[in-house]
Length: 129
Image (cartoon, rainbow, N blue to C red; front, side, top):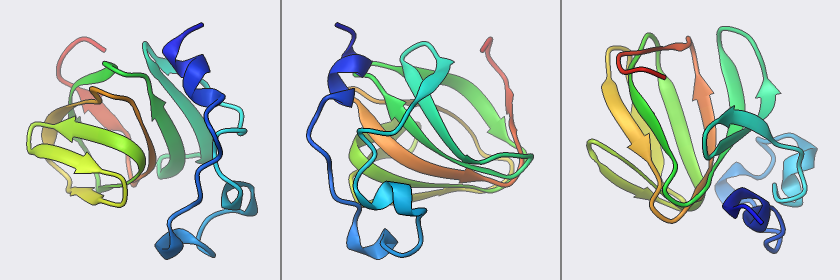
């Protein structure tokens, strides 16, 4: 069984109080039962809104990473479960991360995580994706 499959069978986690009422009803009962699809090696995505500006849930398997990339617009991340790291440090469940336009970084999760992510424009990879 893959790490991603194992995390999909984890108990349902409550949405943090600060987000209740702001997220689609499907998320109010937790995200472990939502359908995720392949995004990149070790990372799965559940799209909530698509377009140049988009909102999604990303689920990282332990040890998964996203290569170095540049933000062409604002990115906002809420860590819902686990922890996510980048060149600036570690964000844990309940933390909010803002990456303004022009930010360049790599992202990884040592222990796995689920994040709610919003970006205003797609990223440009500066390392092979």
